[in-house]
Length: 385
Image 1 (tube, rainbow, N blue to C red):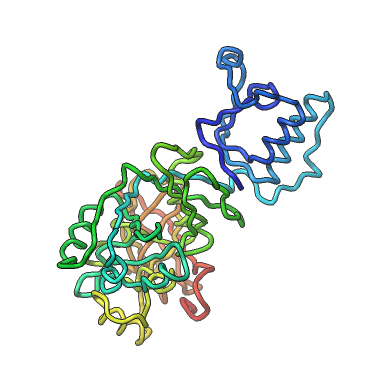
Image 2: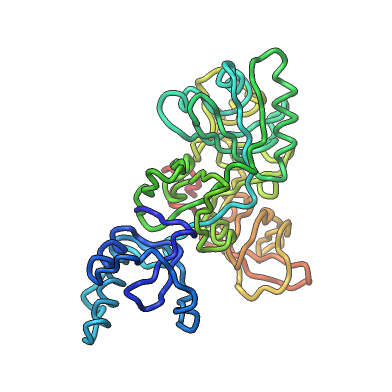
């Protein structure tokens, strides 16, 4: 799938329909059909009174053919039937989201890989040998989460994407341990922007020649792809960032300091080992002792899990306790919530009992029903009652 940017605004078949992100194959086909030699030029004066659709969703090849055939039928003056058109995935299932909540640090220098290897939970050799992206955390000496991030390979350099509120904390921690290592740390958040691209069985976005780096989200395939684009080339953001958070909440994936509480959360309770974020074979890293002991004993009573509530909940639910209806016993805490979907740190054995019913209380004192489930991506044996 190839993307066009905001600067490439097109008039479709002379109808004045404008899309910010289009399938290139679809666009070329339409240009050929109408023989529009100057279809890349948008005349604002000619089209200022024409209707512009508000749905600026990115189109897949199948959905692009759907729209092309519909417009072609309109030009030829015949009726169009969608009954024979079966797109692989509806338009709303594809999202491109600009992650304004993320910042990017660049680590350069001959010691950048060896420097991170002794600090982070994951094996940095995977980034240098097998992959272009790596999920990891930085822990305290007591084995608690300090921050989580995604690393990207960029030539000989490493790009570190984290929550923007933790940018200074991470830079300070890295400089603390740098000592005599030949590593330079620079904030490049003003130069690079991060985008999340996800959807139903979506293939790798084709952005060849556009100066955009494409990386698979290393945590789950369902989280799609990450695009790192120069700030001077704005990739069209067709949805609000809350769509990304809602998507990962449905999967039961937490991230950032509001869901992985700094110096309080335990990495395995954040499902770090299930999200390809830790290596127990690479050797020492900060906080390794407690993390390894917990892993080998196999006792993880609480985990980040997906939760759902009523959509019309009037008050804030973040940090609210989740309780059993039968006993009013607290079994966890909500960590994030968007539009009725969220994540919570819950006692797995208690909340997954068939007889368990849950509730919480919002900031207005209103009682709200809560539902949870075992994520499909959890391996066999995890969370099985």
